[in-house]
Length: 236
Image 1 (spheres, rainbow, N blue to C red):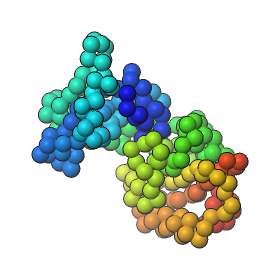
Image 2: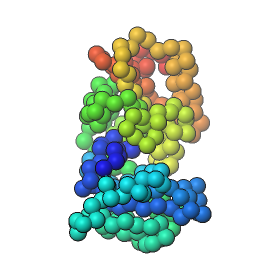
Image 3: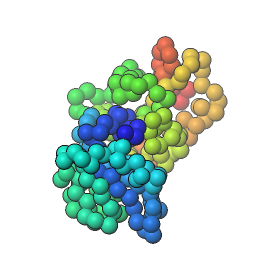
C-alpha cells in the first residue's frame, strides 16, 4: 500500500479507505498519462483524490487485491467513474476534478468551538498532525472565527510547504463569504525568534490578503517545547 495522506487534514489513508484507482488519457489535459487514486477520508468524511506518477498504475495489485470481491474497482478516466456511489456519473477529467475539489462540497465546517487564541490553533495542529511531521497548516475561518476548513502542506503529503499567497489563500479566494486565515508551522528545533525574512514573508501575506479581502490573523510557530504567535509578539 502506498503512503497516501488526506491533503486537507493529514490523516493517513488505509486500504479500506481507497475508493478507486485510474489514469488519465495520454493526450488530454495537464495530467495526461498520470495516475490518480480516489479515497474517502475517515476523519473529514469526504471523497478526495491524489495525483500519482503513471508508474504507480503498475503497483495496483499492491494497492487493491483483485481477488477480494469487496475491493474497489480499477477505472480508466474514459469510463464513467462511480467510486462506490461517492463520486457519481463523472465522465470527463474536468467533471472529475470539479467534483473532488469543489469548495462547496469538500469544505467541512466545525461549529463546535471558535478559534479565539493561539492555543486553539496549537491544539488543532497537534491533533491532526499526530505523526509530528514537518508541516504547515492553513486555517480558514468565518466572520465569527469558526473553522471552515483546514489544509496541511509538507511531509507525507502531495503538496510541499509553500508560503506563496496563491497557495495560502487558495480556499478563501473561492468563498463568497467574509473569511480570515491563520497559518501554523512546526519546527524540529527550538525557536529563538523569527528572522527578518520570516517577518517580511508574513507581512507579504497580510498585504496579499487585503487585496482579495481576506484578513490574515496570525502566524503560529510550534517548536519542541512551546508555540509562538507573531501577532502576540507584535511581529506583525
